[in-house]
Image (cartoon, rainbow, N blue to C red; front, side, top):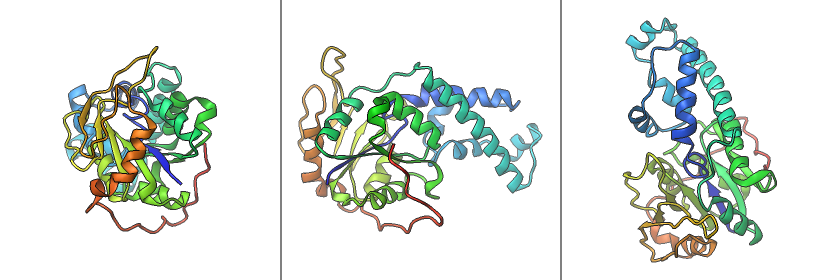
Length: 284
């Protein structure tokens, strides 16, 4: 059984620049925090492994804690960050539901083709589950989104670039890693996919175009789309000689499965045990 597993942010939609960044800054303003991230600042924050809470915790220097009047106790600080993150997720999902951020080219077209061909569909992201589901429905529509299994948030302790979220998804879906193509947009995400033994195609996004994607099976600017909404992809690296046309097809991704051993050799990790108390996410 073949499977297609999407990352969320930057893959399904260009949510980092137009969703997460304004949501972080709106949250900081609501809580009276003495910080606003610029586009340049946030380009560095997206390199932080994990999700929004991990990015927020980079603020917690002694000087910032003092300036913001925050508690110095570690548990109390963690609770405060969790409050910020819950509100940030609410603001972010509101932005997504407004329809202000369009899906990225090709993501729905490829998912429709994969579903029609009997492939398993999933999303594996360390962003909050509510955020992921809102982007998934935006990109796929309600009916197709219901065909996806969603693995998100704190379902694993170690976040990307650790392979845990992909290894967890593969185990829970009963898949052979060699039959799974991951679609990522960042080096951290690519390393997570490769570490779990998956073939990985990269579609670069707003903040990731200059990252090192050595090890990916295919690197393109987007999956692209035919007319009438034509978006032509540009191939940045094609180590397996897939040679996609103006837009990537499902058949191109299937080639990655037959030739993917060379691309992921040396990257496969040992599957980790399920996190304590974890349960399989429901499809859709």
